[in-house]
Every structure is written in structure tokens, then in C-alpha cells.
Length: 164
Image 1 (cartoon, rainbow, N blue to C red):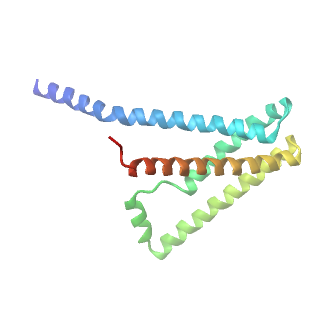
Image 2: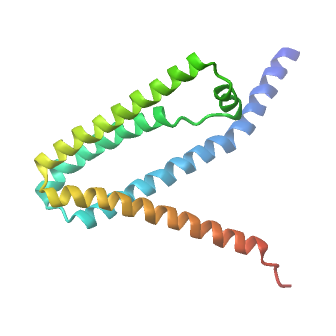
Image 3: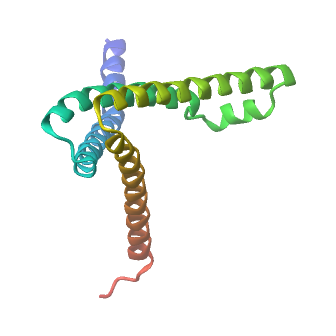
């Protein structure tokens, strides 16, 4: 019977700890979905696509972004402090392998961009393909500025003493 209560308390404890984490993951997912929707609207506005162009472009663009994101995760994985410390202490042979692997991934990334650039150029006029790249840069810049501004605002609010 003690084992039963232990299991009940154990799972209850896990659910209490896991709930905020799960909630945070859902919030992050919603946040990223909102950013993606903003990006679609931003690119659509800047590229000025016709209905026919949109129908051909968006499925291809989504495929491109999915493959690009996958490669970026491989290129720039999130590393723990321990993993970084391990990388800092590799032998020459291991370091050479890591560097070769990194540059191979860079080549794959470049090849992917080149491949999809050709695909985009088959379905869109050249100037609209260029607008896409420019719009992506402008969107990233806007996101970074918004992040910086929100952090500055947050820091200013935290450092400003509250009046009674």
C-alpha cells in the first residue's frame, strides 16, 4: 500500500512540475505561430504577389523554410555549457572532424539556397525573388528591433522606482 501512495505522490509531483513547463511550451509555440503569420503577411505585402504567384510560391517557400530550418538546427545546435566545454577540449583529430562536418553542413545549406533560388526564379519574376530576400532581411531586422525595444522598455520599467 505504501508503494501505491508513493507512486500517486510521485506522479502528482511530476504533473505539478511539468504543467508550467508544458504551459510554457504551448505559449512558445503560439508565439512562434504568431511570428510566422506576421512574416507571411510581411512578405506578401513586400512581394506584391498575384493570386497565381501566391498559389505557386507559398507551398514552395514553406518547403524551403522547413528544409532550411532543419539544416540551421544541425549547423547551430543549442549546446549546454558541458557540451561547449567538451568541444573546447577536443583532440586535433576530433576538432578536424567537427570542423569538416560544419563546413559540409555549410555547403549543404548553400546548395539548398541555390537550389530553391532557381525554383523561385522559375515561378516568379526576378524582381519578386529579390524582393523576397529583401523582405526576409527587413522582417528579421524589424523583429530584432522589436525585441531590443521591448527589452529596453522592460529594463527601464524595472529600474524606475514606483511612486506611492
